[in-house]
Image (cartoon, rainbow, N blue to C red; front, top):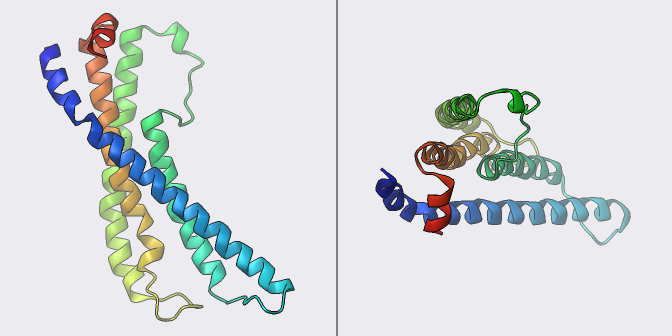
Length: 178
């Protein structure tokens, strides 16, 4: 059985690349947020710096992308808030089963976010425009949800695989494979 895990482990660089890509996008979004917010604030007090009306809408949209994508990143690191007060009292097999159950629930949420988010983005979002930017579709305001769902799907598949691998591969074998 551990042989199959060695084969599947070969796609780990794909997960690493996806993580680095989403992290890079989050960094770009943060830089854009800071730059646009700085321009808007400075534009209120310094006469030669413009203070366009669209800054608030764009900053909020970039923040929504950043929020949901960074939440997807937290899945891979296992950094989400968890209730662990009773972990010391539960058998290890039950903890692993509960971890897999939780991952399956988040996987279902990711699929729901992708499908329903896409319907909203192409439905409601595509029909409206930003008030301050009448040429820009509100599609971009709803689009972070299916994008984050896709990122969550990728990272949850890896988390589920790692939990299943942890059941079948002993700690010594894990260390030997590194």
